[in-house]
Length: 399
Ligand code: GLU
Image (tube, rainbow, N blue to C red; front, side, top):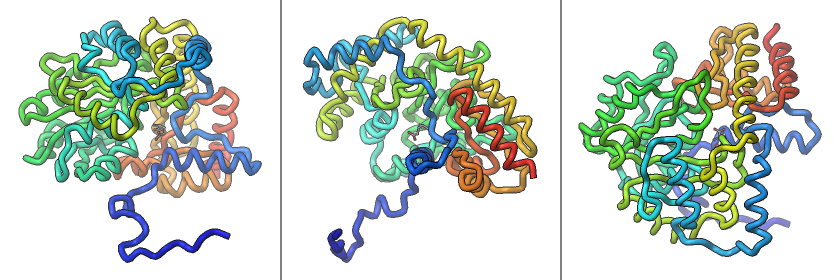
C-alpha cells in the first residue's frame, strides 16, 4: 500500500517547478519506450538519438579504464587528460587555443554545461535572450534558476534566422546573455559568419555573454562549416561554449561534454560542480578523451557520412507527403517539416500519429510559438525505421 502523501499548506513541491512544462523531447521518447515495452511497435523519431551506438574504439578505452580500476571520483573540473583532449580538439577543429587548466571544465553533456553556465553568470531577475523556436529545455532551465527567458523569433519566412533589429530590441538593462544553438535544434540552420558577427556585435555593444550550444557542431552537411563564435575576433572573453559527444559520437548514455569559458566563469563552475555533482564520471571521461582528443577515426566519419545520406533521404521523403514541406538540414539531424497545409496543429497531428499510427515525433509548438505548424523528426534512425515511418506517415496523411 502506498503511503498517503502529507498535505503541505504550500503544496507538495516548490513554486519553481509547479508551472514548468515537461521536456517534450524526453517525455515523448520515454512514452515511446513505455509503449514499446508493452508490445506496441512504435517507430520513434522523437528524441535526437541515432540508431548507432558509440564506436568500439571509444568504448574500448572506457571499458579498459573501468576494468583497470578507474572507478574513483576525479577532480571537480574533470581529469587533466580529458581537459587536455578537449583543448586539443578545440585547436584542431575550431581554431581555438584554450588553456585546459583554467578555461575548460568537464560537464554531463550540454544540459549540465548550460546549468553551470547560467548559475555562474546569471543573477535572479536577469534576462537571457533565447531563440523561438529553440531547444525545449532552455527556457525552463533559465526559470529554475530565477532568470527570465526572452524569446526572439526565428521566423520561417526568414529561413529561421535572426532579424538583427528584433535581436537588438530584445536587449534591456537586465539582459545578461544571448543563448543560441548552431547547428540549430530544431530547424537545422547553421549560422553563417555574418550572423555570428551580428550576435557578437550586439553582445559587445551591451556587454553581454554569449552562451553557445554547439552540441551538433561536428555534423554539418553539404560542405558547410561550423564556426564557433568564441573564435571570432574579441569573442573568447565573453563566450561560454557548450560542447558534447551525445549527438556526434552517439554517446548520449555517457553524459559527457565540456564547457570552454573565460577563467573566472570556469572557476565559478568548478565551485558549483563541487557542490552539485562532485565531478563527471571517471571512465566516461576516458572515453570522452579518445572521442575528442584523437582525430575522428573512420568509424565516426563513416557514421557521419551515412547520417547525411539518411537526412537527405528522410527529408526528401517527408517533402513528398501530402501537405508537408521539408528541406534538408544544413547541420544536425532533424527534419523540420512544415505541416501547415494539413490544417492540423502540430500537437494534434503528433498525437494522432502516435495514437493511431505509432509514429513518435515532436510537435513544433514544444520549441516555442514560432514552432507551431512544424514537426521535428529525427532522421538518423535505421534505414528500415525511416522507410516504415514514411509508410505510416503517408497512410496518416493520405486521407
Ligand atoms: N537534446 C535531444 C533532443 O533535442 C535529446 C532529448 C533531450 O535531451 O532533451 O531531442
